Amino acid sequence: IKLALSSLFILTITVLPSSIVHGFAYAPNFITKIIEQSTGVTPVGLLDVGGGKTDSTDEPSKEEDVTSTPLPVAFKGPITTRFPPEPNGYLHLGHAKAVSFNFAVARAFASANGRCHMRLDDTNPSKEDEEYVQSILEDVRWIQRGLNTFGAGEEESGGEDDLGPWFGNVRKTSDYFQLIYDAAVYLIQTGDAFVDELTAEEMREYRGSLTEPGKESPYRNRSVEENLELFSKMRAGEFKDGSYVVRAKIDMASPNLNLRDPVLYRIKHESHQATGDAWCIYPMYDFSHPISDAVEGITHSLCTLEFEDHRPLYDWVTERMEKGGLVECIPRQIEFSRLNLKYTVLSKRKLIKLVEDSHVTGWDDPRMPTLSGLRRRGVPPSAIRLFCERMGISKTDSNIDFGILEDCVREVLDEQSPRAFAILDPLKVTITNWSGKRV
Image (cartoon, rainbow, N blue to C red):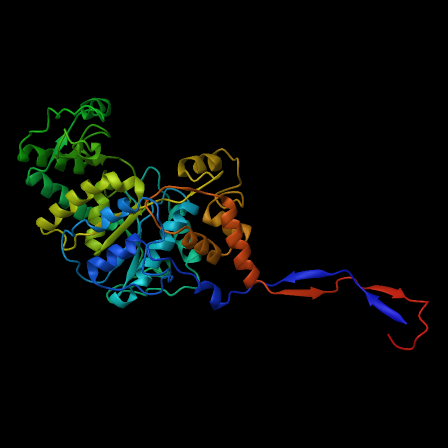
């Protein structure tokens, strides 16, 4: 009797069942509670954790303080969020939380026509590149793969580069450069901004410290006409980089350093990856960001905790823009904790250095914590979303063990990857001591 014996080989076939990509959900949290209370719209698709309580018990009073903040105005239009990365590097795991949550919140309020915009905050041409633009769009498409998209707007149509899970076309802050410039002119006209010519070092000295108030610039009380003339010359490219800036006129004695006459515009004679040489002055993030949110009709601007101290400036800008008739919507900024991983570098500045110094083969090196690196490593996007959802949303910073991400990857792959046995190299064996006729 001859028997065929063999070694065993496990063949893994990857599939993407709908039960995986649609089976995850965020627990109710303080942000969904804020939106529900301020709009009267009940979110759908959240985990049932009993009584609608938030998913975090850490410092509840800190989170409840945000929910009690009165709304500046009633919200108009659909509940709208956005993901606005700077195109100065590839997206990493820290961005994955922001992407997942902004899109998830919009889907949770689908009954109120919830939508999420994709916007590139391209206000610093010296660090931006078209390569980063394309990689960001590819990563967002990948991490949202398998989920419902928001579709195109009624009045929007674009090419293939605009297609993605977001609502409408890909937006860029550079699309609003003229409006942002007009906003700066308006602030100068109303006496809320001025052109300053202090050097960077002098500006730091005048700013003061956490324990000492700042000093007003000697150029703070220029006439409106003189400020407008200087700003016009800045726009025309008549001055060198760093020679002049436009600053808001707020309060140099404010305990919040961000309100001590922050810079709104600076001169940069550099070509922009989207607008070319059309501009030689560029707005600062704290000025362009609230205006971009407002003009797009963003209702809830969700960002990480490092922007909490910037919120008063955000509100200062949007309130004046609305008063001047430049925008119709006043968004609400809400902060949540960022994603921190133990033993993992998530600083874009340090990741760039790894790439530039050739310590890795590129941004998509499988050893990198970038989304493109994880994609090359074989991590499915649904596993990253599951990881982000399990971490939850709170206002308390924490360091997460990398092993939790690996657990999510194993869990997803375990369900996604059916196993099959295969005989690769059969071994023929003859049994000589069997006297029976049948086995």
